[in-house]
Amino acid sequence: MSGVFSPTRAKIKERTLRTDKWWLEPAITFGVLFSFVIYATFRAFEGANYYKDHLISPFYSPCLSQACVPEATLFGWTPVSAEIFNFALSPALIILIFPLGFRMTCYYYRKAYYRSFWLSPPACAVAEPHTKYTGETRAPLIFQNAHRWFFYAGLVFNVFLTYDAIISFKNVDGQWGHMSLGSLVLLVSSTLLWMYSLSCHTCRHTVGGRLKHFSKHPVRYKLWTLVSALNHKHQQFAWFSLAAVAFADIYVRQVATGAWTNFYFF
Amino acid sequence: MARKLNLRIWRGDATDGGLKDVQVDVNEGEVVLDVIHRVQATQMGDLAVRWNCKAGKCGSCSMEINGKPRLACMTQVASFDEDETITVTPLRAFPVIKDLVTDVSFNYKKAMEIPAYEHPKELAPGEARMEQVDVERSQEFRKCIECFLCQNTCHVIRDHEENKKSFAGPRFFIRIAELDMHPLDKLKNRKRTAQEEHGLGMCNITKCCTEVCPEHIKITDNAIIPMKERVVDIKYDPARMFAGLLKREKRN
Ligand code: SF4
Ligand code: SF4
Ligand code: FES
Ligand code: FES
Image (cartoon, rainbow over all chains, first blue to last red; front, side, top):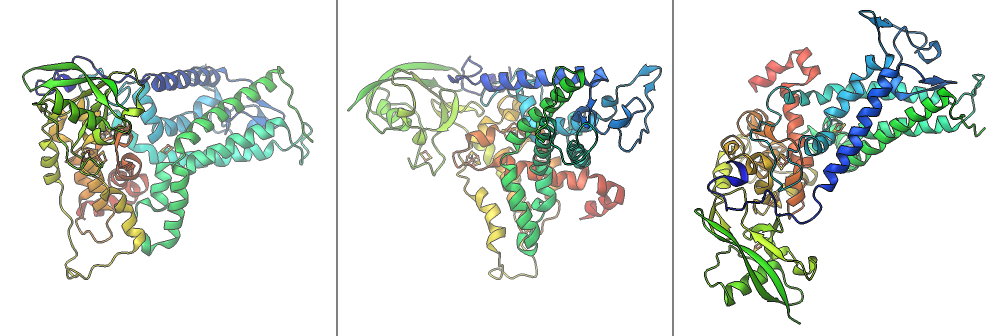
């Protein structure tokens, strides 16, 4: 018997005496994240319906494979072969590791999935089911310390996705100065991705958090206060940007399959 | 106007114990500590409860109220439904002494293990000056009243007794952060010892310490995560790894 049932502790048989709905939040988090993972996996393997008339799905950008629709590539740059060991490789799978790694190692998502998937702990003052616990001190979880690497990669991705949003301000014939619902969708999702990156704890640390002397670095101090303000909302940006990216992909897929017509404002 | 309140109080000691039901008068505006005192005065003369200030500032009256770690003197009875039974137990992460009183000496042992502030040799005492922006950061951490609710809630030790020897706990991570962010502190290896000796890596940033802190200190966001990032700086940073700067940091 360990934990709250250890011999020296007050003898209480319940794992928790909380009377509120403490299970609701982890249950919702589990449901939403799980649905996203299922959908993203399906889309990553689909290998089709990711491009139509200057709209490219964020799941497939940058499109680096020889299998890519030529218009979806970055100026025709396709360094990765279309198949590996005779298996067709979806272009999404090549790049997926970066956004996936970024979110998996994010301090906020860590809290979210440690609680909802791993029940470690399911909620505060609710005994967890595990008998042993070493936290993030050894493999594989020590790998969480790589968040910074993914943060840098994430910034590069944001540049690509912003470029995609700009490109979407073309009409079907490739003329600039037009705007569709699709451009709006991509613009919102890339903006939210920037907000998610800028509010990241690693960003906060990098711009100024690591300093001992704010007074000696007034500019970095100012930046730190700005990022800190965004950082308070990191959890919200994490969810909104996830939802926006998923919706952007759904939108592009629907347009690409012909189920929806992209509506042009002008 | 008094009304009756149903209360369940844990009574016992390290050998045995259980929840006892009592009915007690409660007046408007009273807090849970008030009704516990009334039970002590009228029905259970030997009920053990630790308290001191009744103002949320001494950190003595930490206990668990309906399963949530809280200060009894800051928990309004009116915050519960009138027909609700309120259950109070001692903290569940520490050894119980009697009734609602636990032995929190674990925390004092941990406090002694944290290396103290090291003053610059070239500065005589009294000569040190700090700017307000530098002070502000640690001021948040100085609000700590040492109620140890965060320590009690942290699953690393609450759910794993064996981790107590290798884990200092959130209250002491804010202490380490405060010193590591101090512009004058000269001690060099705080980040490394935080990770290797005080168990910073065991925290999985699930934020329960922040949730229960009565002083609303952003323990996770402002102390633990910044310390984790500082550890990454010296141990896992890509740029520094490639630049070979890691060695220099080690010598520091
Ligand atoms: S965030 Fe870390 S220190 Fe705080 S309660 Fe959770 S595991 Fe413990
Ligand atoms: S940090 Fe907050 S919860 Fe922890 S001991 Fe201090 S005041 Fe109490
Ligand atoms: S992206 Fe969430 S903390 Fe960095
Ligand atoms: S009695 Fe001092 S904090 Fe409650």
